Length: 285
Image (cartoon, rainbow, N blue to C red; front, side, top):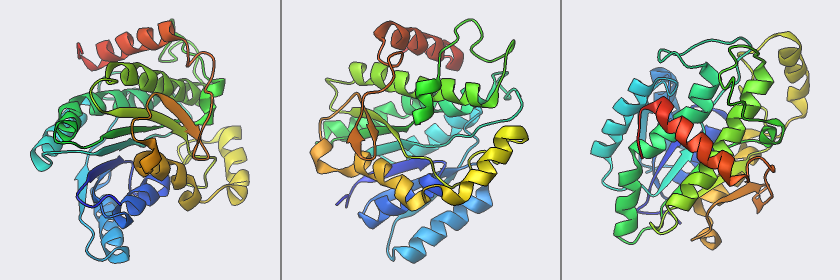
């Protein structure tokens, strides 16, 4: 049970994020939901309260592709929560065409990777506060098996010369795993665990921003995909299973540890992506 614990889930208005937030509420946690659309986020919070009577659920609104929005959200979270026990970085999308965010960064990399990095670092002190009072905080990064297909192209990280929806997505998901390992190393003596996972191939709103052959193929596959409820099981396991206390720097699939890609396990690449990511979000941790 997570009674007395505070959990935060990004991308929580539907799909895996919503089911993860619902599962954490059922375990007794106070749950913060982060969504981009205010109406959808508040409706999702009310759905959880209706499903789990007495659940403490807080909607938070932010576009996590914007660094200013992330910093604003983080300030709100620091004021709202004196402690944070679980952070589930889940928000992400795939985009058919290359577009730039308000920060001038390619949107897939900005949302799916840098969003995880900046939000985590901005609220890391709140996670540390939980560790100080005897908690066992967990950072859970929802990555994807797509990372096996990914490669960090340091010469064209934002696809300015060559862009493809799946190529950009796979690179960002590889970024999630690399970030997980680099951060786990840094927090090993802080009492905070950091793990990544593949939730499965899920029938959600994923790929709704794509067209062409990829979008058509995904639409045809959708009836045969795993449900969001099943997809959230690995996220819930990594976020709450007692046997994972102290387990850090791992990649999970189907709620079991699995070896991630060779590139993800290259410490030199991890450190290079860490340094690049911090530069792109304007931090010097």
